[in-house]
Length: 455
Image 1 (cartoon, rainbow, N blue to C red):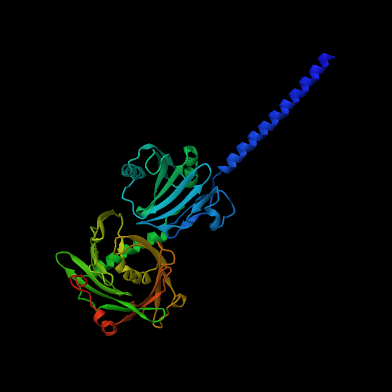
Image 2: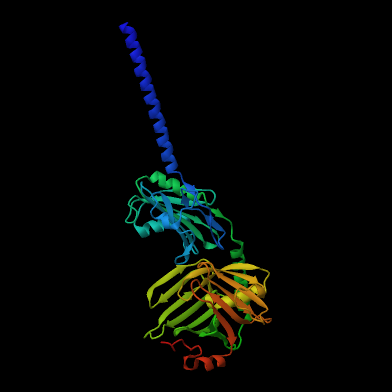
């Protein structure tokens, strides 16, 4: 009797233990599933970069987009920019993940010009600049070959970071940076590899065509040979209400002081009294140039100056009185901005519908511009009755910034409409220098030789 009771009691205890064990296992599985779901890396829709043939993704953990007003307060979400932005000769896309376990910062960087010819050299140079140690390098072959490394802890990354580089066409490169503010380096590497696998890249045909047309442009300039100084090209600048906002005047000439070069002298007055004077000397045969610019805001006692020298062999030297000198390694020719309208004129005579070209502005910053032929009735704002052709310029580094250039039957530039984000548009209308003198009186001056008038 007692033995039977003990057996029955043992059965009950065994059954209870089995039930508890099953509950424990199920709880463990659910916990593992929750952790896995919590740490699952879901990618966003591809974010494309105009004119580059490139798109990448950012991580996100929810299929439903979270309102911008709630993103900061959410305990587990990706936040940051949803579009590329310009930063010193490159385009960047940044995001971060805020969670209870720690934060992770992600940044894509598309470099317009890369001085090093291999990813490993880029990584080693970056390690030397930041005084961090490269632990080990790895290679991802698909979809785009990328070399990456884990860098040891540093001032801005106490837990280390992952950085990778992929070399693209035309001297471009793509960098990926993952900085984990957490102790789980394995999870950070998973994020890195998942992001690297999201790259979609095709060789940008319009950029390829733009470079081919750039060679044709320089060859055309070289064949022009010596010529007499040309009449000034003058434009009156007004706002959309027709009010005067300034002027632009350019004088072209050819000089030969032991080296033949084309010369452009420019003077510009902008609204508010901002004066700009520029002197560009281009040697198309050697693909080198010297570009001097002086600008002075109204009431300023001294001008800001910038000298840019291209040696035609891949080096740009930029010297300014408002910043330290810079030396830029550029594998391809960059078109100085004053030549952009001449380059657009060549597009009209070509078989290309649209091209992309890198343009250099007067402070030494380079950015891509897309040029496209459009019909006169396709323009958004200004319409000139005698315009036979129109070329639209989209400045790809600044969303919403564009120009429309109007040409007559003989290919002369007769007007322009320019628009920048958050600013009213402006019209440029071709006039004579005499008309500008009558309008601006003492504020009107022809380009100086040398550029010392505004000093």
